[in-house]
Image 1 (cartoon, rainbow, N blue to C red):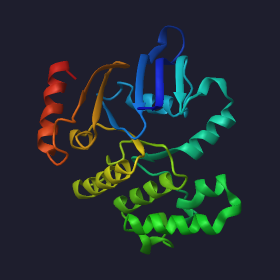
Image 2 (cartoon, rainbow, N blue to C red):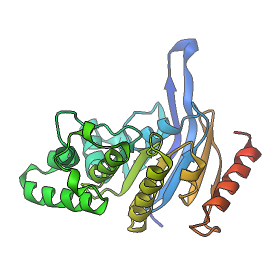
Image 3 (spheres, rainbow, N blue to C red):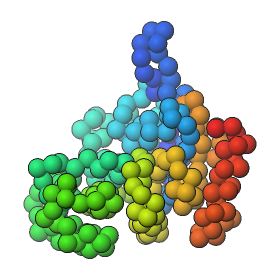
Length: 252
């Protein structure tokens, strides 16, 4: 299986002098093409920082990040940005939508930045994605005129506009009620089944239970991981129980 992301001995520090601390302390990680992984751990353990490092969104102090066979440290920031736009999608707890644009215009924004000459195809694809996730009637709405779950669906549409090889999600269900969270995870599972790799940062065992592999972080290190392939995909309770057992075992 080819690797879509490889992190080698990543160190990320914040602060200066005696106040400097390593938020990532020599982290190594690999994610296969088409894999569905999650990262769990207490607040401040480095989960989101790892996601930002692996996506090239944030620089690192030392180590290496290789994305789709490209060492991100060997190319300039403009080229890294191009890779993020063309090969990665991002879904956050609070979707970063522009208030002066309606839902449809927010969705097409990254694709328009990449290919302004193909507006008709971009609009067609955006509307198809909106229909797929059940928000086709919200195209002209302002972002303040939809629910949190609907806004998150729009965020997923936007993340898919450029056919990314991987979607990075930082607590994508954290602001949603349980029903909306389950619906969003159903969408992620469907997207993953079609071949897109997904990496989610989450504190929610029910969210992590929908993924195939879970990495556990503590104090800037990956301290353990488990694979849930022996469980039936619908056995969420069994998966959650295994996650809880592991967290007790490693005391996080």
